[in-house]
Amino acid sequence: CSNSVASTQRETQLDYRNRNLRGVFRQDFGWLDGRLYLGVDAILSTEDDDTYNRVDFTRGTLRDAYHLQEKNIAPFAELSLSPLDKLRLTGGLRYETFKIDIDDRSPGGDRDGVREYNSLIAKFGATYELNQDHRLWVNVSEGYYLPNTSQTLTGVNARDLPPEDSLTYQVGLRGASLDNLFGYDAAFYRTTIKGQGLNLLCGGDATLCPEVATDAATYPAAAGEVRYQGIETSAFYQISEALRFSFAYTYARNEFVDFVDSSGDYSGNFNAQSPKHHLNARVQIRPIAGLQAEIEADYLSAYFTNTANTDRYRRPVLTNLHASYEVTPTLKLHLSILNLFDVRYADRISATNEALPVRTYNEGHQPFMLRAGITARW
Image (cartoon, rainbow, N blue to C red; front, top):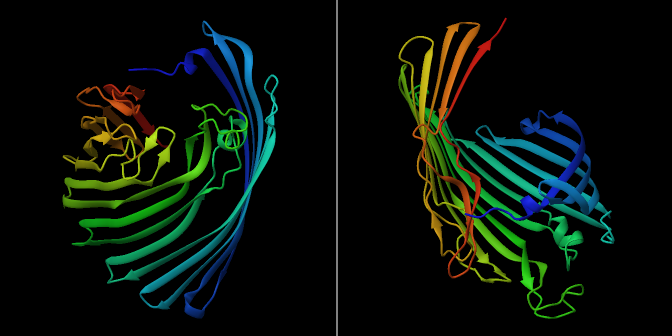
């Protein structure tokens, strides 16, 4: 088990302010039951990020200081039509413009800079009503993700990287039967991300790494490709007024398609901290009027803790208990027991890619915890 050295030697102070404005215009049409949305999202945020050296848990000298201004303006349009009674089509466009301005106020700092990004992204969806209780749906959407500021401005050998581009396909079926005593939702998804940021070795090449060009130094590059695909399902069955069963299950295959960074070639490997199977099951009972109790079990399959796929971790099954009792229409009592059997686990584990991987335990386990409360209305 290891902790971050920086967490004991540094202290960070953040001052973050965010302002968000959204305007939307809606117009309905009699033709094909059409509906049009036109709008714009405007976000302006500022952040002061100051990091100090710390000695014996006492704040010391200023190490790094940055003032960031971010502006995001995104006009969008969405149109929905029904060419058939049971078919609904929806399409949309969104033009993202993003600007970040960094003022480096570190001692001797000179990494001031501006980065601007823009992208036109589209989406399309369709829903078909098979019958009154069952619907088939399809979605296709584009997306993009901005590189972090250390890669583009504040880090050593930083450079102007493009955003990561993504394309997502989804198809699903949802519905209910037996007078809504049984319901289900199932979907297949596939997302491919291209241009993912990686750290590559400089190899002593000063043209690649103008600031630090040692053999061990790295530089950021938009060179990775990752694929996320799987199946998400959920269902419930109301066996009787006193008993209900429900579950949610996800099967995920998250893989590196093209991933060669400074530590090796991981193309074809699975993403770290990405379990294939996740099952959450719940049983709810109502033994008497006003009393409701639910027991929940959460299962994760073993997952790789590093990109080399040489180390695995399996979290134990977690069990929680929830109960409530309605004393009167205006008074309700609540009780929750988290980690009912007080099992020890790590919320998330990462490991190095060395021959003998070194693990880091993040956000240690949640022990047995009891919570009680009262809700009153008047």
